[in-house]
Structure formats: C-alpha cells, structure tokens
Image (cartoon, rainbow, N blue to C red):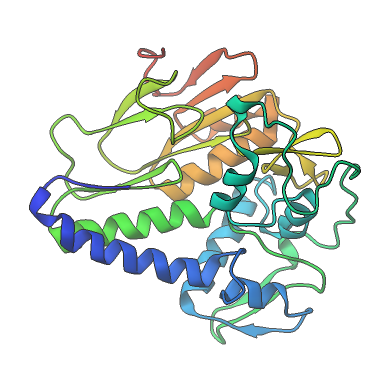
Length: 309
C-alpha cells in the first residue's frame, strides 16, 4: 500500500517504492531460491559475501534480538520450516485460508495429519551469527537458518516511505502486510489507519482507527497466519526459548514507534513475552494496543483509548 499527500507525486513515488521492495526481497526473502538469504542459509557454516543491503537487514535483526532479550531471534528459520511455514505468505494464505474460516484442517507443506509436535534441537541463537561489515561477509553456524520476518518487513516499509517522500517531495505512507511507515509532511490530521487482527479486513472490521503523523505502526497477530499440524493449531510467532509457537495470552498486538522497524520488533516481542509484555512495553515508553484471546482490549502509554469497535 502506498499513499502520498500529493496525488501528482504518486507515479514517481511508486516507481521508487517498487524498485526498493524488489531489491529487499531479492536480498532478504527466505522463500526465494535466488535470494541472498537463501544462499546464507545454505552455506553450511561457511562465510558468505553478501550485499550491503543484506548486511543492514541482518544488523537490524541482531539489534532487535539484543533489545528484546532474544524474544525476537533471526535464527528461528529452521524451526519455522519444521512447523510448516516453508512457503511465501501469499501462497500459504491461499492454502490455509483465514482464521475466520476455522482453517478447515488445511495444512502447509510437510504438515500432514500424522505429523506430531515439532522436534528441533536449537544449535545456536542470535549471538552465534557473525556479520563482518568491513568484508561484507556473513557466517551462520551449520544447520542454522535465518528468518527476517520480524524485522525486514518494517525496515523495508521505512526505507520505501523515505524514498517515496523524497521522490514526490511530499508526505508518504507505505504499508507492507499491515505494518505502516511514514515519511515527509503528513496530510492535515495525520494518516488514518484502521488497526485490526487482519490488515486485509475492510474498514468495518472490529478494531480501532487511529491517526499517525510520523514514525511507524506495526501489528503482529497469532489469529490470522495459522494452520494445523498433527491436529494442533500452529502460528508463525515462534518463542525462541522453546522452539514452539508462542503460548501467549494476546491475540493481536499493535505498537507505535519512531520507525516501523522498531514497532515491528516490539509487537512481535510482546506476543512472545506474553504476560510480561505490558510491563516491557511501558518501560520502553511504547504506545500499544493489546487484544487478549478473549477479545478484551488493553491500551498502554499514549495509545488513544477511544474508538474501539
């Protein structure tokens, strides 16, 4: 999604946004055979020369892991694969449907009806990833696969919004999978965003409409990207401590921050941290909206308390 405050700037902004997102996808996608990240994941423990773009994405992922105490860890790629999240999100969505459809027993690849619980031995965490910017090299331990889903999407939105604002000399908003980044001067009253479980839902879906003037807003949810494996309901938010889908009291967490990347990291970390999330978010002064599995909504910090439907 791309919005600009000056309609005449849309074409120029779109060109720059599409070019940037194509480059980031080629660098950071776990679902492309020709991506740099796939090459790193197949390196068998050897150092790999990569682009500055992937270096930047990996540095952000490692910083996110440090800031969240490991709640957001890029070394969970192999766990996600074993859980069945081994294909592009759009293809996965087509295969499994949505949470509102009750999943219908559909499963991703490798997750047939006889599959049991995930069995995985964590060989290394984020501290074992070596990023050598001076030599443009990355090394991950043998058997470790990286996934940048909790960081690269927000980072891509931030970079794309900056380029759109620069190209159009105007305010810009970029949304990727429900994560929102802004740049430049916003329209009067700010950018209006409807926050709900599934960003694909219409504006009439239960949720809250808020206005943002700068920075980013990200939503993470365990209610949408779900599937069944061996009769067990799975989702894509992995707790690095257990290697299992996070056992969290929250259905959806939305966070506002200075950048979409920061908001994306915090929203994912909040789901993993579970009951500790409100205190952690408040200590970091991050406005947030948390929706419990029972549908109860909790607002933190400067998140507006009015408007939930």
